[in-house]
Amino acid sequence: MQRAIKLLVYTVLTAVFLTSCGNGTSLQSYFVDHQEAKNFMTQDLPLSMVEIDKSKFTEAQTEAYNSVNRLNFLGYKASETDAETFKKEVEQVKTILSDSKYNDLMEFSDKGNKIYVKYIGTDEEADEVVIFGSAKDMGFGIVRILGDDMNPEKMVTLMEALQHANVEEGQIEDILNFFKE
Image: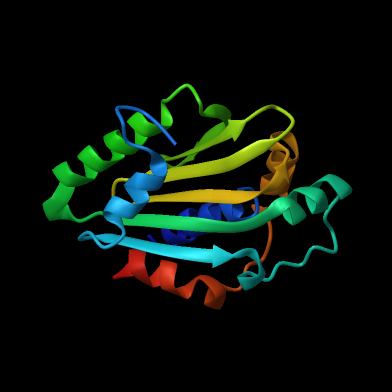
């Protein structure tokens, strides 16, 4: 379970360095509507809040990193008693992200945990990058990554580098504790 928590958090952090919708609901309004709802947590993180050793970044990774300004995180903590609510919320997020304005960037899974990376914009410049990951036993997390001149292709190379980065857990303690409790 500790590995699953770390995987979800690292995925969210990866989203930090990358950085809305269907049926009348945008991703932004979903964030606002759920920021104080039961089992939800929100956090706005400036990029400067997370320290990463960038000395081994390629030029493309450095450019991608520097294009990110901030991220907005929304997490939902699953519980055995709210399985139907969890399912409903995941479906609502998936419906929002199925809007044609979202372009697929990448999708992967690890031990049943699905991660979707999408963006709004063109192949050369993304206005927003969105990372959505879920795990039935933990919940889900959504990260909206906002910045200037974000290149989706370069963001993918940055994500790959960050998957192997050593992130100080103290920097993401609130998010880790939310999923552990």
